[in-house]
Length: 395
Image (cartoon, rainbow, N blue to C red; front, side):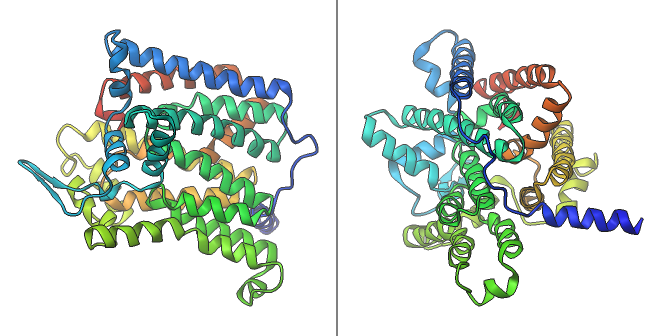
């Protein structure tokens, strides 16, 4: 038992080691063809679903794809952040809850292309999805081999929650940036890490949490004492850790300037009936029929079931050497559970791209990729249909 415990501890420590590029790193013509083919196939599939939901009216495709939080991002891109809370007959709120990375990209795309806000956002999402596929291929290849890297791209493209990264939602920016952060950190490219981490913290609240695994990776690489005294060679790693909050800090300064509340993104959560509670309180409240919201009991249960599945994948991620990524996902889930709501948990978890890696390794090694991909694609089509139809279960 002592030997097994020691081996487990050593394995966990090694999971934080850097991973240099594999010997066969790079893209072959077949790899590029697979990535582009998957990207085109999934774009056409989503467009077809949106067109069917829109009743065959092509002019409504944009509105059909831009559901739930999407209009908020488009509005921010066009008009900026609210100066004060808005008052409607039955609701009070402001757009402070939505982080600026996506609105900035939408505004820039609109300026460059002349596209209207919604279509500029849709265009951004497609480019970002392609970037995510390419980054995922390289990221998985560093851990395994080309066949597994191809499996990783397939499973990312056909993820049940792929629709959220293919429309103007924060997932579109978050997914490629999260992969880029860990890929660069594994390759000890700390300058790239700093840029990607800074941008990641401008996508959503949990973006700043990437500082935790980055600090652990830097500690493993350099040692704590060398980091604390900024020994030669550690400067870029320390900068990357510090930059992990730069996007959030800039957003807070902007909100303070515009609305006089640098923490407005947190304070405004009450408009969505969110409040800070212990993670277990959220779970027990959702599972207890006496405290669960009427009509939402099954919905909460499904959300928590997805969360449980994610925690199983976290354990699998540790086993395959993804220690930092597993730490990040665990902390992010715990933070998400402190809101008192299970709403959007599957969507948030679906954006945790590193969880695809253990599934890809398992599917490829056991010859299970085809059935897994088919099952995942089926779920992806269902979720995309529900999204386009405006069904709140997938918001």
